[in-house]
Structure formats: C-alpha cells, structure tokens
Amino acid sequence: MKKVFFVFLAIVLMSCAKVNLQTSQPLKVDINMRVDVYQHVAKDVESIQDQLYGPAQKQINAILMMGEAYAQEYSADVTAAIERRKSRIGAIEKYFEKGYIGENKDAYLQFVAKENILADLKNTVESAIAEENADRRTIYKAIAQKNGVDVSETAKVFFDDDYKRSPNGYWFEVYEGGRYTWKQK
Picture 1 (cartoon, rainbow, N blue to C red):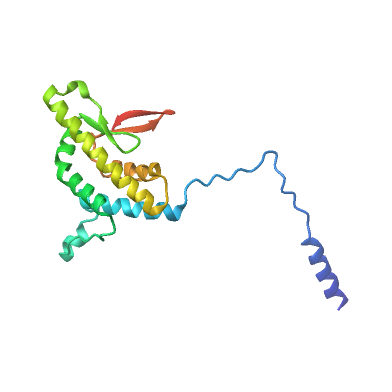
Picture 2 (cartoon, one colour):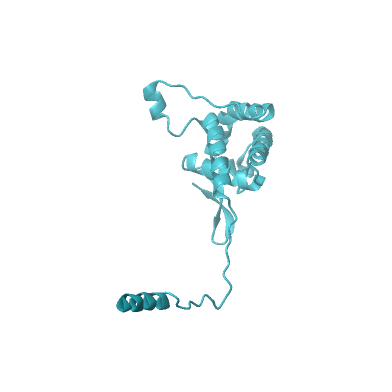
C-alpha cells in the first residue's frame, strides 16, 4: 500500500510542473474572415455565376437529363440585374477576347486598351461597361447585405470566381510584386 501511495504521490508531483508561457513579443491573432459567412457568400456567388455562365459541373445534370434550378431568393432588382447581365454576356466576352476590357481588383470592368478602339465602338464598349458595372454593384450589395459582410468581401469572391472561370487571354488586375498590375490570364 505504501508503494502505491508513493507512486501516486510521485505522479501527482511530476504532473504539477510549472510551464512558462511568456514570449519575447506579444502573440497576435488576426481573424479577418468568418469562414461560415464566407462559405455562404461563395455559395451565393456560385449560384449567380452558374446562372450567367452555366454551371462548372454540367456533366452530371446532362447525364441525368436534369435542368438547372435556381431558388428565387433574390429581390426583383437583383433578378433583373442578373437577366440584364445574361443578355449582354456575349458582347462583354467579345470585348474581353479582343483585349479592350479587363476586370479590375474590385471585380468591376474597365478599359485596358482604350486607345486601340475605334471612336464609335469606344462609346458602345463604354456604355456596356457602365451598364455591366451598375448591375454588378446591385448584385454585390445584395449578396453582402444578405450575408452581413462588406461589399468589398463579396466583390473579392466574385473576382476569384471570374478569374477561375475565364479562359486564358482575359485581362485581370492582380496583386504581384507588392502592387496591383494588369496581367493576361
């Protein structure tokens, strides 16, 4: 019995070791993004992008002969903005392919090569950019409000998705070498 007591006492004494948790510099914890909110934003972005460009994973639905279905969880303004974007997507893609426009770091369109466009076409492209950006702004604000995040966070998710979906040759404003610069994908 004495032997068991001394073994128990030795274990208790050894387990009461002092641990120093001091560091030379204070610990910093930087949590800027709430993962759960980000996931909801990403799902909303994917839903809208699928409506515009078609789903990234079409194969399963094509095999099963199922159509795409989207929940009507957006306001009339957002739904109208999505429909307007759908109607102009062909022209926007053509301007991307010709290198006239690109997507900036804030997920809005802007001229990349304004000087290479004929004057009458320049006005048409400028008008398309303005209309597209207005509709994007409407959509970004709605998604941000729905998920309780800043519009810039929503725009970042749209930018990432646009970059991922776009073909090579499209222009994007990307962070490189400590600054933002225009690069072709």
